[in-house]
Length: 375
Image 1: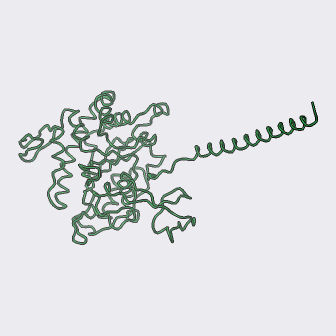
Image 2: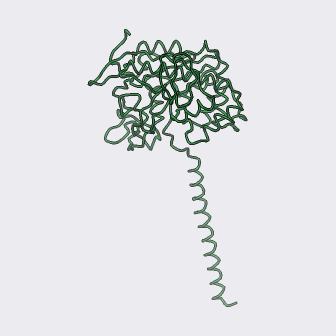
Image 3: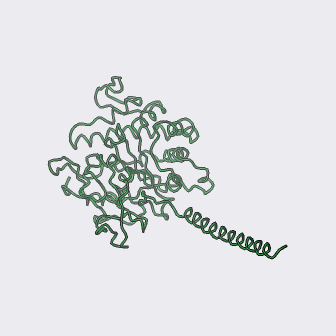
């Protein structure tokens, strides 16, 4: 072989080796970059206060609501359910829909009923990957780290949870928001609910006489949506809603878990109007009593909800208490509201809704009072 060919072959070999080395280095860099991205958790804009880990086997808190006719319509019912798994009690804190929110950084509206349909954008620090508040921002930057902040779309369910987290200093482990059609379907799936009717009235196309009557789904919906004007009408409606929800709970909790999952909860959750809830592992774990890791690996939201309802059915009716949040009618800028009493609320939370946590003080409650105490 001539010297020229030998030189050419050597140069080609060197070029091939350099090219291979370049491909290996670049490929390794790309692989490491992709792997690193996969290990970075997604930004969670719905990071809220839940029950401390030390108490999660003892108690859980659930937000329960009835949504409006349309997705952005005012909420029709909102309660916080405290399920004491250890003491086997259920406490329900009922919130009038006209409840005043005050000038809060968290909400774009003043009334509780309007929070769902008007989620306030979230101020977000990308550098710290967390939500920040307006008093932590100056010249478009987060004052704690000096990096720029951006605005992200708010969360409708997150806004409702913030009412309990921020204003009432209560944790929320999961939420169950029923579209109106879901309530109708649930009532029909359990063959109606037995409700005390106070006066003769027409509901769902049927005229009912005073007394305990079995209402179908549409009649039950119309019954809970009835509302007279003013804050007094809001409170009266809470009592009607309480009757229907308790009657529905009694029917549901009397069923076995498999029956609930296969014939009631499963079909509802797989239908066109499922209950809106959090199906994350931690949220579903809060619905159960000391589940094993193996059980959680096979858990679905329908099964968790069915199991929770069945377990709650073991609570005696005498150990289920519903309380309207303490307050009174008041007004601001000529608009009628329900004004929460801060001191009375702190007392109620500590006595009935805080069996294992640190005592709630008035300072913990971010409540704006229009009228304080007395009623």
